[in-house]
Length: 371
Image 1 (cartoon, helix red, strand yellow):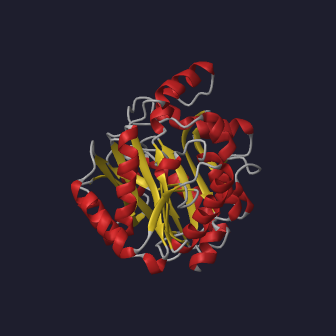
Image 2 (cartoon, rainbow, N blue to C red; image 1 turned 45 degrees about the vertical axis):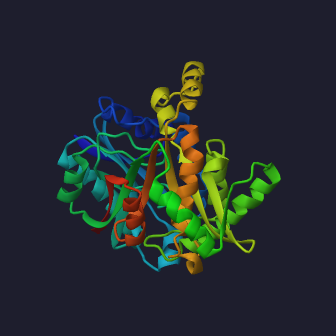
Image 3 (cartoon, rainbow, N blue to C red; image 1 turned 90 degrees about the vertical axis):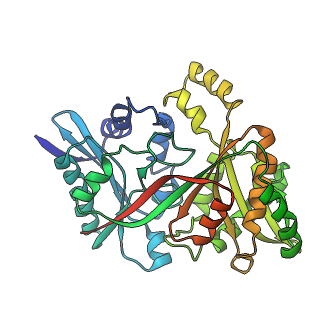
């Protein structure tokens, strides 16, 4: 007998977290998240998202067997930014059974209706500043750091349950062993014409903190006009910095300045999913040794975000950032680079990716559902 349960106990949370380990056990492209980090993520005392929005997790069960999961959540930051009363869902995982999927989406819809919403959007885990979208193309390659994966039949379940596409997000892959000549040629001209200087994140701890504050300032200004943008609270930004800084390579984080004032920034991370892959979700002495060995051999990186203050957009500064990413990344052995995600209507960034001869190798989809 199929049933839906709200996640209210430690046992249910464990079932929620562990379900993907069963569903993806035969999928070589899946990257298991660290189980202890998942518990922290869903802990309202440790995740600042819970300070401004509400979350409810659900399980679909047949007797004691877990068949699916989903989250329903509000996003007050989205409502403030876009004046759009809409609820959200995320963390969808499900066996290939339409009746189970329908039960999950109905539970999320009912919860969101109870909050006064007439539509819901997702998958968002929990917001655009985290893992976003359903993978609908590019299932053979493992996802890069902070990008989701999915089973191919999910898009069929979404469509059958009445969800409709709202926006596609693209991931572009560049495989390079040397600096692209075109980028090298353009970089010098653009830097001179734009009158900006590009520098890496400082390795001095005191100055690094100032640089991080600068990045937050630019991020807030640069993304305010983007579709679906949700500004992070200061608490969320500090939390993400605390999580990502140990993984970051200052040589892959850049700040553009004009006359000493910030104009933009670019952030790339080594692809630590290569490390997570060998850890299999577990944190113990054996997996730590495997992680340390693998960490020295990471061969890919993801350009996670790039932002330019409005007055500096359209001047080719994004190409300058890519030039410096190649310049600093290639000697470190980062020969595979992902630029993600890019909105399907962001023609400027799509042109830049194509100029770099990057190929669109993954597509993620955001859906809406009237409720």
